[in-house]
Image 1 (tube, rainbow, N blue to C red):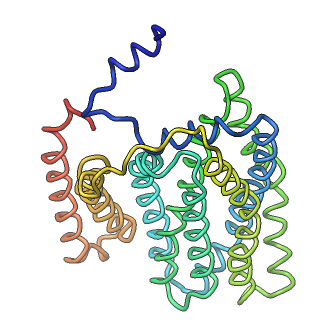
Image 2 (cartoon, rainbow, N blue to C red):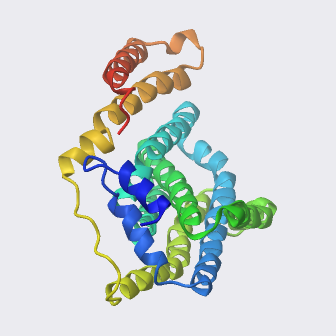
Image 3 (cartoon, helix red, strand yellow):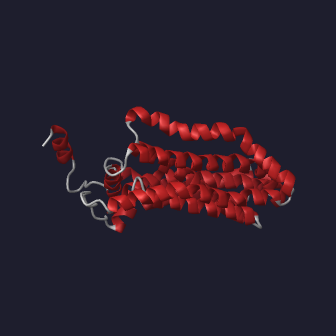
Length: 309
């Protein structure tokens, strides 16, 4: 036994088994080649390009959505909602990847579903409440894609190459779409009108990005199929208990308290914007409840700070 193997064995106790998602990534890396990884990078760059086009094009439509609903403050609150759910994605998704798989097509499929829901809801919304709901899925999908792809880069590249490949897809897509994305949004509004053009402009990306995600998802499925047909690949460790995952690894209670506290504090502040007449009892109550949830979050999390899971 080598020194490195002995150290790894001594560091891993029965209470700290190898995560299923990490073991799954190691199995995949043992059956794929550099050529397979480069082909996947091309498909991934195509997906990043579509996501960047959607991001820059949809920023053009925000002003027209605001005009359609005549509710500027509530649309501003939609941005707060998106950022809050983006924050919770940063907390939970890495742990999900550790359990489901760091190179898993199901993570990308989940983010694609959230993207479809977000764009479809924005395109078909009849009121500002539906538009705000779409921003929930927008926050989940945008941040989820970023985290999932960063984990993928980390697993499939060496430390020397990681910075290059991690930045290449995002930078390449951002350079191309920085001006052309807004131009596409302007052409859509010119051809389909400002009244309904922004709806078509949001809704069409639910189809386009789904199609662009298919090549990368198909490649990941082919890798998993190759693993299943390889006789010498070691078996995966068993699934951990679902209750242990939810309340210890994901710390669901802490995450819910944090999201509720931040949302209840920031949304009333965004709606009121310092105008005295808008400081109603409802807004004040939401802020008080938000600070109460924040105190509960601190009380729940503080005893566990010395023993992170």
